[in-house]
Image (cartoon, rainbow, N blue to C red; front, side):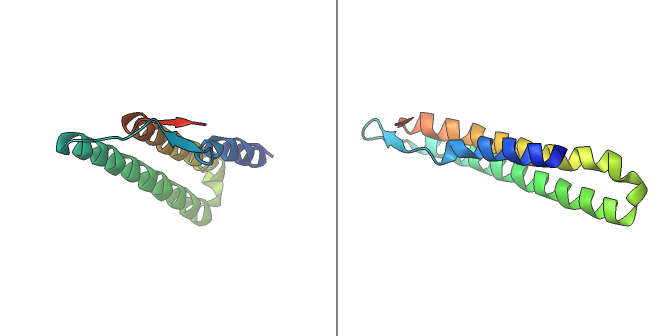
Length: 103
């Protein structure tokens, strides 16, 4: 039951990515700004990959040691929301730096 509720919340977190986004006008970024944005992208990818690794590890531990399932389940259920938060944070920074706004 808890997982079903979580899936609904996760879907709502991701809905912010389907909104139409429009530019305010032309945007010019210098090399430093591009590299900073690239650094944020790398950080977000690393965080999401880490969350996926946590999901796989928790599932594998639950398979190998079913008696630990209760404690692993909480870790497993936290990861998608945290990954969505990381993606959302990067998206907000990306849109702000490129002068994008939601229509």
